[in-house]
Structures are given as structure tokens and as C-alpha cells.
Length: 148
Image 1 (cartoon, rainbow, N blue to C red):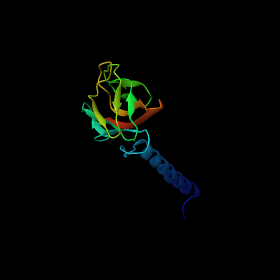
Image 2 (cartoon, one colour; image 1 turned 135 degrees about the horizontal axis):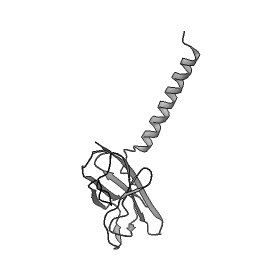
Image 3 (cartoon, rainbow, N blue to C red; image 1 turned 180 degrees about the vertical axis):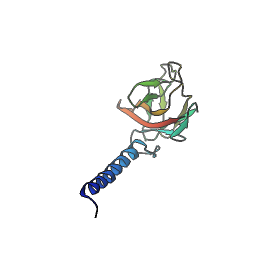
């Protein structure tokens, strides 16, 4: 017969493994492109795991039924570490950019940060932010991993 403490530890391990799995499914959301009614943008990368130094192509798609306006030509793209520290924003001009419903724009990141250093291995958050026709903020983000 098994000791009570062993049974308790096994139950705790199974429950915590399940909870961690659910958490990782939320962080690593693989459903990047979802079309909805109303304002929406989607960020699409060709994969989630990249080798160090590999170019990351990012598609920003207006996946809603309302045009989205961006304050500059970078389409509100920001790449941060999970701590929120800004790593990269594309060079842009203050020209207002628009995406009609169903339209998309492709940008890329060569894994070089704004300060000129190469990005280290780790998890990065890619986000884009725009405005709908009523001035409400529309934002979407996804995460990618850079491996050695």
C-alpha cells in the first residue's frame, strides 16, 4: 500500500502539471488569424520558434469589418521582452496609415534591437496597436521564441 504523503505528492504533481499546461496553452496561442465582426487586427508569423539571427516576418491583418487607422508607417508594431522592455520598433514616418477590412501589411524583424545589439534567446511579445473609426484602441499581440 502507498504512503499517504506519496499519494498527496502525486495528486499535487498531476494538478500542477495540468494547470501549467493550461497556462502554456494560453501563452502560446496558435490561433493567430481570426476574422470577427467589428474592429480587429491579427498578427501572423510563419511559425512560433525561430533560430537566433533568423528573419521574423510579421503580417498585420485587419481581421475585422471596420477600417483601422495607425498613427505612423510602422502600423503600431512593437517588440518587447515579456517584462515589457521595448526591444524593437520599425523606423517610421508620421504619415497616417490605414488598413481596410481584409487588407494586410508585412513587416520583418532581423532580430536586431533598436540599440544595434542582437536579440538574445528567449520569449518575445510582438504587438500592434491602431484605432477604429470611433477612435477606440484596437490592439493584438502574440509571442515568439528565439532559440540558439
